[in-house]
Amino acid sequence: MIEKHEFGRTGHLSTRVIFGAAALGHVTQADADRALETLLRYGINHIDTAASYGDAELRIGPWMKEHRADFFVATKTTERTYDKAKAEIHRSLERLQVSQIDLLQLHALVDPQEWQTAMGPRGALEAALEARDAGLVRFLGVTGHGTSVAAMHLRSLQRFNFDSVLLPYNYAMMQNARYAADFETLISLCESRGVAVQTIKGITRGPWAEGAPRTSATWYEPLQDQADIDLAVNWVLRRREFFLNSAGDINLLPRTLDAAEKFFARSSETQAAIAESDFAMQQLELTPLFV
Image (tube, rainbow, N blue to C red; front, side):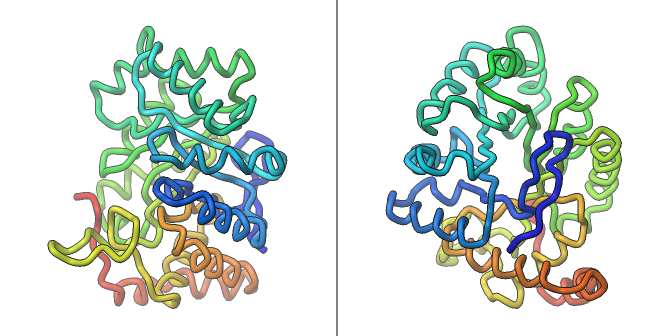
């Protein structure tokens, strides 16, 4: 089974691998149901989706009648204004077939102008707070991509005390000295406040090569070999305060969960020895997605 850890100050013990439900955006309900069976088999108790992930919320909705109590359910809004965000929040509740969302996140909040709108008067944050006050959502978070995301999350936390952040973390990304410095500053603040840290792009090899066949549903090229996935997953999970959100392809899900299960089955000393092998990560010749 997958180890659980306090999800920040929410009081929820989340599995340290969170199901990234972008993987359900363009699959059939039958395929989605098989993904649910995989989650249950590994004991995964946290689902992270978004209104912008195609049909993902619709694919999760039918699970909720029987399995709502089994999962901490998170979704996201990409809207920046109060009216549009409010409408999208209510749409997500309907699509997910739930009366309450555990975590609502302001999605991809990196652009400074969009940030000003979302965090300002009649912005998306006001709609999120209203939904929280009405009991429609329990906790609020912020997400993003790119090399500026850690710095922008710091700015967001200075404006509002979000319960969680979500951003890229992998070996190649952390070779960017500026990003690594901003990232660690953010993590220090999160630790001091009890803000949960969700990491994405953990098994990324790099951008798809021009003209290369797309062998996965992800917008980037993921690692495919189980040994490589094991190494990358280990590298992320060595940071005990981090959660790893799985990649956006249901075929990669069991490989990611298998890697995590093997990691947690080892002693802490062996985990550290394996996870800290930066030399082995170098041999994978990873390429950063964001520069």
